[in-house]
Amino acid sequence: MTTTTATHRGFWYRHPSLKLGGLLTAPMAWLVVIYLGSLAALFLTAFYTIDDFTGQVVHTFTLDNFATLFSTTAYFETVGRTIVIALLTTVLCLIIGMPIAFFMARIATPRWQPLLVALILTPLWASYLVKVYAWRSMLQPESGVIAWLLTPFGVDSPGYGTFGIVITLTYLWLPYMILPIYAGLTRMPASLLDASADLGARNGRTFRSVVIPMIFPSVVAGSIFTFSLSLGDYITAQIVGGKVQMLGNVVQQTYVTNLPFAAAVATLPVIIVLLYLMAVRRSGALDSL
Image (cartoon, rainbow, N blue to C red; front, side):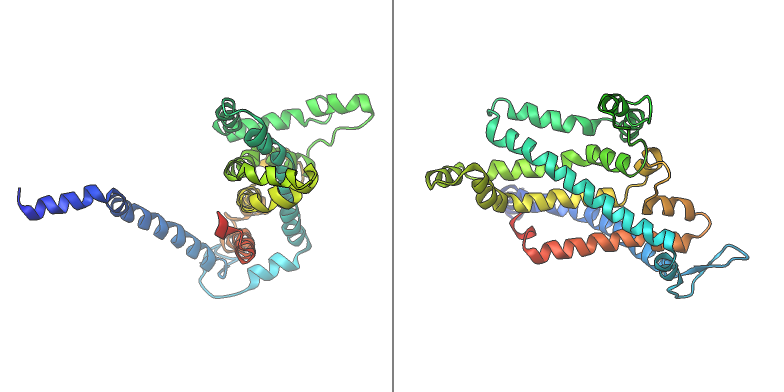
């Protein structure tokens, strides 16, 4: 073995991260090209139109698809409904996930924490469709579990609709909110909580002034998952939404007959998520992740 070869191998042994980075460069570049290329094709198609006689895509730049999307009342209401459902799902995931994550990170003993994390991850191993159809069964207006629980109190089951979509999406994406908050809480020094208590702060004041600012980046990370996943979902709305539709349902119904319009509708959630990420970046939350 020559001295040059030995030196070269020794360099890679001392810097294994550089070797791994070199091996992953080509696959990552390929994935980026495919992902960005698909988005570019989607964006360009949104500015084309369809020939009503032949059904072929006409490659002529036009804003008619977006004009139709925002000028038609039904489509405009669908845009607003989708955003509201995504926001409600994110808020519910935060309300439910915050105490769970706090219990896992600060109250449970270190012996039980891995088990609790595994229990939070367990629903993710189940099939997406199985979970949605399970909620469809529970949300049945007369014979579902929800109706059985509410009937003794004189309250009718909400059945299928916006409530069913929100509660199902909350169940589906809740782990994506709990785990980032849990990770943020585990990194928070316990001395901060002790110092707050020593200074006379009550639990509520400590939570507002110490805990929330420390885990705010984790909350933002979880909200990105829950908001974006809810914004692009359409299967849940199709199964438990009844007559309620989201933007994904519009794409599903129109991509065969009018591909450019479906591309315009599919572009809108991407734009909304990008605007949300820009707002989050301006807040500085992403810099602390």
